[in-house]
Image (cartoon, rainbow, N blue to C red; front, side, top):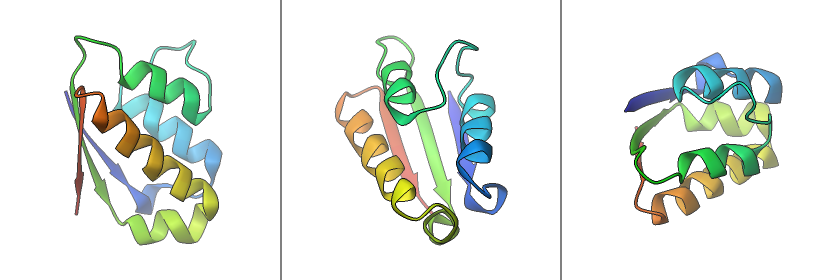
Length: 87
């Protein structure tokens, strides 16, 4: 599965998690927190390629939470089930 996370569409944490839920086809019971997203992303058999666009806007609008998001995606990539492309 391929997904693009565009920083232009993120205004706050709520809009980030709504975007993640939609773009990554997260289950309805996935909590709106980065630990829950990580758990879903690293499930075996569900490989994903995630393209990040406008990371600067993510950082501007989310502050430290953007850094936590990016670290979570890097950690998920180490599982072998996620590839992150920075554009």
